Structure formats: C-alpha cells, structure tokens
Image 1 (cartoon, rainbow, N blue to C red):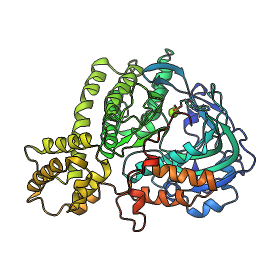
Image 2 (spheres, rainbow, N blue to C red):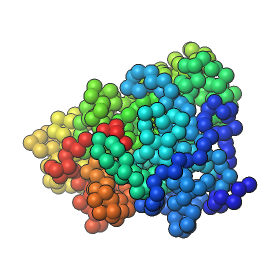
Image 3 (tube, rainbow, N blue to C red):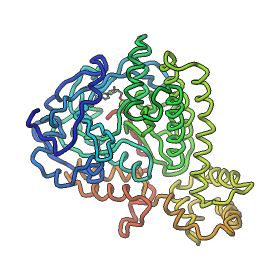
Image 4 (cartoon, protein in one colour):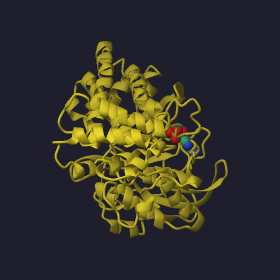
Length: 479
Ligand code: AMP
Ligand code: MG
C-alpha cells in the first residue's frame, strides 16, 4: 500500500488484470508548472461518492493532473485501433489519456477515472499528449449537457489549467480534463486484436467486458453483441431527438457500453438542418446530423467483423438487421413524447414528419420549435419566418389531434429542453476563461445544461439562438 491520497475511494486495478499487451502502465508526464483548478463538478463527484469538500483538498489538483498517484492504482494508457472516416487507421490508443483509477461506488458499479491531456504516452503518434482549454471546456460542458438531457455519456469531474501554452493552429492555453465513465473500452479495442489475428485476445477482452458490464450475458457472446447493437441504436435515436451531432463517429470513439464518448467538434442544432455538419474537417459530411444513425450501423458492422472469431456469422447478421427497427422504434417514441402524443392514432407519424419537414424548409430553431409547442400565441409561429401560414395550418392540425389527450404541458416540458448547449453558449464560457480568467460563465452554463428542462429566471438569454456574430461558428478536429 502506498500513502498516496485516495479520498476514500475503493480503488481496483481492474483493467490491468488483462495481459500487458492491452495497455502500457506508466505515470503521467509532468505537464505544466503552475497548476490551478479552473472548475470542478459536484454532480460527477457524487457519482463516485465524493463530496464537494474534496475540491479544496490540497491533493485534489496534484492527483487530477497526474502529478500524484491516486492511492495505489497504477495508471495506464490503453491501446486500441479503429476506422477513421471510413478507412482503417491501424493502431491508435490513449495518445493523451491516462487511466488513473477505477473505483467501485456504493452500488458496486465500477467507474474509470481518466485524465485527458496529461502528457505523452506510447500511443501519442504525432501528437503532443496535450489538450487545449477550449476543447476541454467543450468536453466538460458537452458531456454534462448530454447527461442533463438523460442520455448515456461519460461525465466530467474537473478541469485543471496547466499554465502551459499549447500549439495548435495558434498558441492556446493548455488544460487537463478528468472524466468518468463506467468504461472507456471502444469498438476499436476489439478491432485492434482482431486485425492482428489475435483471436484469443478478442475473447479475453469480451470476457472482461461481459463479466463486469454485461453480467446477464455471461457465456452468450451473440446475445451480448445484440445488446451492444441495441444500445447503439438507442443512443443514435436519443442523439437525433436531442438534435446532437457527435462529429467524429470513428470506431475508436464508439463506446462498447453505448455511451456518448470523446467529445470533439460536436454540435447541438440551432436551426434545424438535417445536413448539418458540425466538424469543418468533415468535408464530405460523412458524420452529418442525418447520417449518424446509418454510421452507427456501419460502425457495428466493423465491430461484428472484429467479433467474427467469437460469434457465428448468422447471429451477427441477425443482430445487425435488427438495428434499424430498434432505432426507428426508439426515435418514434421520443418524438411522440416531444409532441405529447399518448394515444396511438393513424397519421401520427405523418404529423411528426410534416413538422420536421416544415422546420427543415424554414430552418426553424430546433429546440425552440419543440419547447414552444406548449405555448399558445404568436411567438411559435415566428420561428417559421415567411412560412407562417403553413406553421399555422400544422398547429391547427396538431391541436385537433391533441383534443382528448388531456393537459400534456408538464410532460412535454420535461422532454423538450429550454437550455441547450449551443455553440455560442459554449463559446461564451470559453472566451470568459481565455480572455479574463473568469470561470463564472462556465459555472452558470454548467448549471443550466445540467437542468435543461427547468426554467432558470434571469438566464433566458442563454437559451436563445445565436446572435449574428456567433452564427456559423465552426469547430475543427484540432483540440
Ligand atoms: P480523436 O479524433 O480525438 O478521437 O483522436 C484520435 C486519436 O488521436 C486517439 O488515439 C487520440 O488519443 C489521439 N490524439 C488526439 N490528439 C492527440 C494529442 N494532442 N496528442 C496525442 N494523441 C492525440
Ligand atoms: Mg477519440
């Protein structure tokens, strides 16, 4: 036992039970000289049983920057491979991430505690192992916003400013994010071993993942793959209904647990545009908003191939074929809830489709168009600009349909967010930190996106579509 601080966490070297070819054990590089805690998130801390007083513990910053070890846990960087933008990319791995702990919570669930931006690893390739403040804030807010919407995701515990200058397209301040996830195992982990012909390792990893995270599927590899496919389909439906585009759905960013992972150039829709591309590096629009569900399936096919030494081809195909139906069912259920439809009626699907078509044609604001459904009056019609008459006709039809559904307002407001992490809102938090060292807006915005369905009096401006100077703000892969 070491005397390194553990903050009372029940740590377990779980992943390291796998043989050494799955990772490299190593301490974090020493990144930066003057480390300061920019922000820490009580909601995420609570997930692993930590109270907010831990943030002022003198060991907090040293541990959550990699300077000091967390208890006797031996940090490690994981190896994985993947398909990037449709092409096999070979070995990737944790190039700037380091697993500094795995902790069992009171329920018995295991949580990965991972640093991002804590220095070079054997998998850094051409990278510097660093993360910039801008992208760290984006991941911090993005993952908490997705969690706030009730969608499965990694979480963000803290941001430490490193005081370093990091070179990207321009020099930028550096930061270290600590994120939590039940697991950081990706589709690409399985691809890594399969494509090297190491089928025993594929099996070891599957046993490891099933044993810890899918105990109901012990001994049933095919059933487990079906569950992964189901969770992926459901995640895609949740993203679509929320108006979220991940931006870089490479197989190395796809979670084996079906959670949202690796927030880079993601985006939430402002104006509804099915062809929305949030990542300006994605010139062909492979990961455009409306392509995401299909890409989820493409990625599952890559995973199926990686599991083909373990699972019979017919079973893989059966589960791949079930994907679309699961996606459609979930998406329909979510959209019905957004409209407040309870009874099943002929024409419901068409009602939903025609609203989306009208929104696409007029570029109506996605979130406002749904949140506004519970309001009476003219404001909602203004969202559709010159198509006011068509919007009015749709609303008449909708009102007639809602006759007899009872008062659905509270239920609808509980699924149509008022506060969405729009790009301009995230940018407001970033600029305050970068320009003035002010984490105040970051703190305020975090609270809004963690409770996105509530009204937050006085904060209404942060629910608005972008002002002209922020519209069309694009985000790149460089982070
Ligand atoms: P991403 O597109 O962010 O998911 O990253 C793809 C791969 O590049 C992963 O293996 C990352 O660990 C690695 N990577 C991204 N940025 C850096 C960096 N600055 N330094 C080292 N590795 C990086
Ligand atoms: Mg990644």
